[in-house]
Image (cartoon, rainbow, N blue to C red; front, side, top):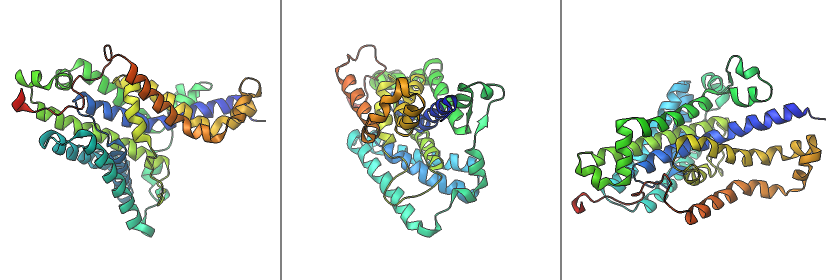
Length: 331
């Protein structure tokens, strides 16, 4: 019989492990949307960051290089989106979908092009070491929650730190407050001297770069194994867009929101062990069809979108000018 404490610990541990790429994607999209832009290209942006970050990290045998390249490559997607929607006034929804199509296409093109030359993660000691557990002294030894919360790889802690820093940036810095003004009313912000063009460009690049870090995390989580039919991101970019609404455009609440989705994703794997170990209260889990567990994250995404459509806009963190192109001449 499975040890109940061990099963529960592993279940909680994997909830955290699975939710982190969603956190990067969600926080990155929040940064983008706070500037007033709606970027539906999260999936493709994360794919680009994953592909080039992983390849660069393997080539240099360096975790730092992988992180920087994933941020930069994904940031270039943000720059492309900004050039098309901010400077050329292209439709944001169409442009975002184009970025996703482009990013996924580039992912498969590069991966299949390398073929047998594809680098194995096991041959890159720096990436293996960088993605191994980093235990926090004292806290990691606590029963159950010690391993679940305080025994993760460095990218998990980095994701939490970025979320908190972005929240602080929005609320307690002059630049962050100006950014929020641009997202709420770019015309008013422009009239008092705020460079709306710079703020939109800078934060589209910054937000997209953060998304790329989530893609790099997924590459390492999948042990760098490229498959010709499945992308590492596997729909996480789309879920991240929905989680922005779930988190009410708050980077700190995004941590909680991604944990909820991480819970449903992890339940796919641990429903059997949980049902067997806790047969009394959780025995019914074994009777649930496996297909339902796989569909749950996407069903929850749909529910979140439906709930947001009927919720009054007042009291939400949604920028008033979200998705609207700004024509300076019409101010």
